[in-house]
Length: 304
Image 1 (cartoon, rainbow, N blue to C red):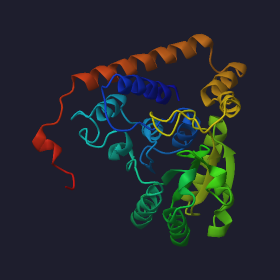
Image 2 (cartoon, rainbow, N blue to C red):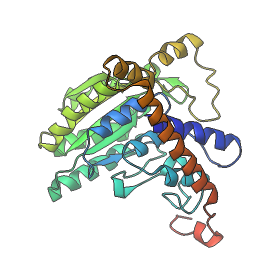
Image 3 (tube, one colour):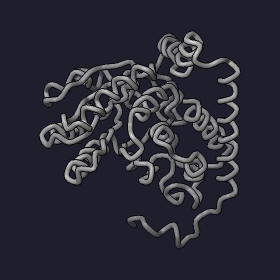
C-alpha cells in the first residue's frame, strides 16, 4: 500500500513539474482493495484494470521503474511510452491491461476466464471496475455471460463513491453488491479500506472460482481521496465528507492494527518506508534517464 501511495505522490509532483503529459487518475485512498485482492491471487492469475489502475498494477507485481517510465512517455515504459497512465499492461505478471473506457474490462475478464476454463489451466481472473461501471451495458452483459458460462472470474467493484463528479447514489439504482443473485452468483459488500477483510473475502471468492464453482461479485466500499483527475479540485464535495473518509485511511488503519497486534514495530515500519522511498527514487531516475521514442517508433503498434 505504501508503494502505491508513494508512487502516485511522486507522479503528481512530476506532473506538476511538466515532466509528463496526459491525465493522471489517482488511486490514493483505495490501496487496501487492490492490495488485499491481489494478495489472495496466485502469481499466474490474471487481472483486468481500469483508468485508475496504478494500484492494481503495483499490487499485481509491476515494476515501479517501468511504470514511471510509461508515465514519462519513455521507450522503457511498459507500453513503450505510448499508453501513459491509463493503459499500462504487464502480461508477464498477469495484468491484462488498464482501460480508459468505463466498464470495458468486464467482458475482457470474462473472455480471459473462459480461456482458462477451456485450457483447464487452473487460473482465476479478477476484474476490477468502479461503481460508475455499474449502470453500463458492458457490466450487465459481462457479468451475465460470466455466470452463464460458469467461468473462473471474480468481479470486484471498487465503490469509491464517485464517477467523475457524480455520487454513486445518483448513478446506480441499487448497490452493485446486491446484484449477484440476479445473475446467479453470490455477492456481498465489504469494507474496501480494511485490507485484512478484503483479503479474507477475496480469498473465499477466488478459491470458489478456482474450484469450478463460478463467479462471485464483491463490492468493496472505499473512497477516492483525490479528484477524478489531477485537474479536479473536488468542488462538488464538502469538507465533512472528506474528513470522515480520511479518518478511515486504509494505510493508517493498517498501521494501527499491526501495532496493536505487535506484528510490526515502528522501527520496522520506518524501514519499510525507507525501502519504498529508495525504490521511488530509482524509478524516477530510471524514467528521466530513459530515451524518448523516435517519430517512426511513435507510429508503430498504434491505429492511425
